[in-house]
Image 1 (cartoon, rainbow, N blue to C red):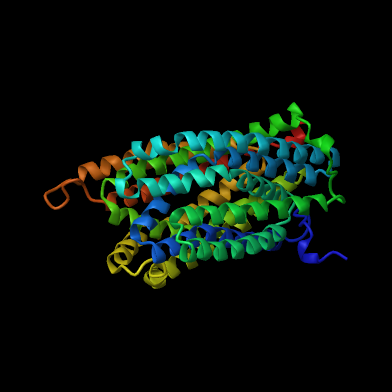
Image 2: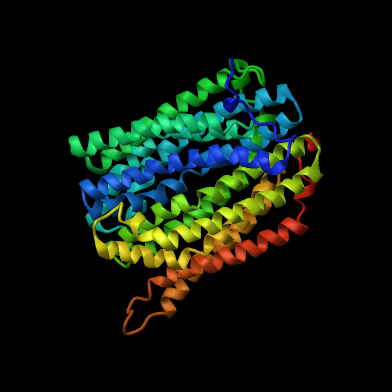
Length: 460
């Protein structure tokens, strides 16, 4: 007998806000657990190895995220196609889509491993990574790239499960993997003294386990689609569609990650203290944005299923309700950060100066979470409808033409006798300005854009 909680959610029926919330809550919990991977890594190395090791793990993250674009693109394309074919009750197309996802994962994993291992150290040098943490950064990244196949299978197959309305399974698998990750972190670092290499090894083992669990879950969903080797055969129609839909999302993430990498170079010029404080901010920020991204992903699935079912009026209604809930969560998050931020940051380090600096940065960024709620909710609906190009352009303008140049220009213009190389606060004010303009663009393009005319099923 099936447990009701593990059944896929049909978002084409029922009250929209209830279905969206029902899907968002387990996915949010899953994202929280996934965030624990990097957070536990930071806590363990910060406590057992030191602040420089903490800075090394944080400096490595933007580079790793930059090369994740292959997985992110395939995952988004898969989520959209699965949601629309499920909404249209097209079993054959759903089976071929999921089968071709497996093929694309293998290709992308091999590519990511080769590219990652080759470019890691040259990129760290190019970004002016301090010599004191360079070797740690390189070790951490190379191990993650070698074990990237587990990360690829989990991220993409969890995208497939999301498209089918099943967010609970991924949550359970992540909880299991996270517990394993925490135990291995402590074993490898505290007991064996393996340093940052130990946390990287723990991460890839845990991710591999979550990937295996996802595959096993899909094998048992024979009531919805057919799982067989013949569907793994490359089919240009389905694989091409996944790539066509996912490519703009991959480019979006690549640009976003590239801007972070280039701004990281600016951050590195201020020394190890700002680097370490920035890592702490990123860890707290990583949890703070989870509700925003979870509602955005839920609205992608919601829009996809209802576009597939041909109910565009229901898409509009759910979009408004989903945006309202996302904004509500964001207001709560801002309040929590302002009230309890210091306590949260003290988890990562006992160095008071780092905690104070991190809290100062978070006060600048706090209002940005409300702006992010608008961006993610509205672009999530566009993606679900099959319009992944519009969100891509919003991200390009927001990050490449605004955030990145603004950071360098504002730091340069703030140079003074007190700040000979510039005021480091300008790095974060530039991000807030970019978010504000991004939110305005999202509202206008949601209202007047062409996303309503999209739809994979209707195109077919």
